[in-house]
Length: 414
Image 1 (cartoon, helix red, strand yellow):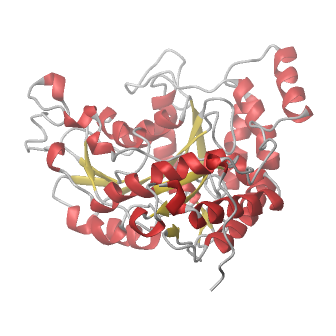
Image 2 (cartoon, rainbow, N blue to C red):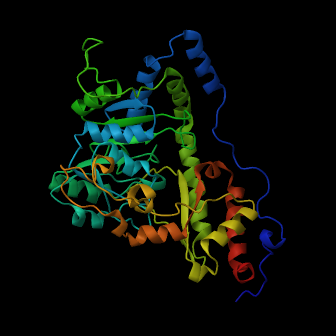
Image 3 (cartoon, rainbow, N blue to C red):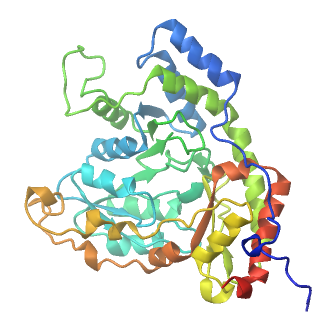
């Protein structure tokens, strides 16, 4: 047994394992600058040829037939659900370990979210628990490709086909990820993406919905464009739509961003592999499981778990120590979605719709929902942002060294 003492953690006065900056975000160069200036000088700033070009190129990039841009990823999920016919009195199965928009999009469609637990080793919806949650009210399932790792679309797709459910993918982390050779967002009935500032491809805000269904594409386009009909007069409106249109400036940015996405995706994957190898075997630390059916996969987040009773530190103390080593990290979500005040409130009448909707006709008490794996993930998960995975190999080695230093000094850091 190696009795060499561990280096002193930075939190206790030692030298940080990593010094210097991490990659800045967003990445941009003359491509973005020239694209924006071209739109500016054209005088054509509104929902035109660049929007259509980006829709076509991004849809092709993800192996989908159709793409419909919109204002943000939240709107993308709402439009996908409503366009697919999800509405009052229906239930949609969602995971509880995700951003709130996954569930609020269901509420915006006037449907009821039903929370099904995640797999602890992927943080994705547990397909093995989906079927048990299906009722006669269930209309759709919304898997989240968390961190860029596709959910088990084989099992989810099979259950959906057999039970007559729609599959709406929350692909807000899935740019570039594929499942058995086909891109996320094109694996179910529709999929929504986000281009918000932190995302792997960004225009500050923005979103897109992908689908292979031409009728669904036309419906979503109408919903996003104030209910106008395809090839119909300008002032004729056929659906209760809204103004969710993307600007030419956003599309120009995204077209430029898309050119470097494959290279960045490959770099993130290489760096994640270094972390997987370097962090494996550290007592009390659990790396997440990869899936050979997901290739390539994007990394919006690199996550792992700190099991406090084995590691010797709480997750919070570990995060504090790792930040002191010059390694930015986040503790992940503080609680599952169903513990948010939004879902803890109870009542009847219009103010509590859609849960209190007479079309639903059932009681949904989120205060009694418990998803053990999601609860545990909220206590144990630590993650790095995608920007850190754009650093060099030596930076990844520094992360590993920092974690090992903290583990070796856990007793001193308590």
